[in-house]
Image (cartoon, rainbow, N blue to C red; front, side, top):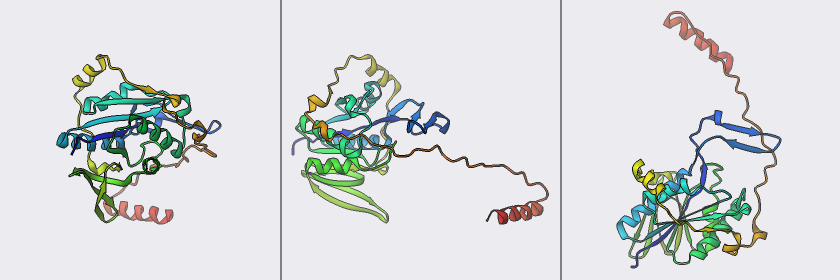
Length: 263
């Protein structure tokens, strides 16, 4: 079979490991701000790792696709350092704050523009909104077989073999190519990228295609913004620490009494 052409959809988000102190909730404007550096969504990194393993075994090419209003190619160059071959950025003010259906529409237009592909990989969900919808909607728009929650992906004799995570273990699913797979964290983390390699890549000039809504020819009438009807900061838990003194027996009795009062 020919070497597979793989597209990985990678979303840029504020670091989900940032402390709560970096998160600000503006109730009036219905906005959540995170004062943290941007990273690639962790599940999308899982998808990239799966793609790189396929490439190591069968060869082929990996194209990373990312969209937004102000996408940082500096952050996304990590995908090239890890093993991807090319990067395409989808940038347009119209691409900011879209709902899942609209996001999938833009991505489908870009994938159709790329043209020659065998497999699309996405994370099982984004690391910010966690909706888990875009991947399978995208598969429907591309009219290809879709497999969700993959923990292992292989291509054998022109067919796709996926171990799909289920509550009681996993199922083995076979599908024809082209296909789309949403990847779960069981695949494993993206391989380590040496700092020296990353710095060398950042210093090297690189021409990265940037496509807007006109370049993609997408239907702007189908682009809908995600509307928040209500937003509130986390409730104050009002936690207090009480020190229980005395011997071990006395502490046990007093602790039991306190817990009984809280029931």
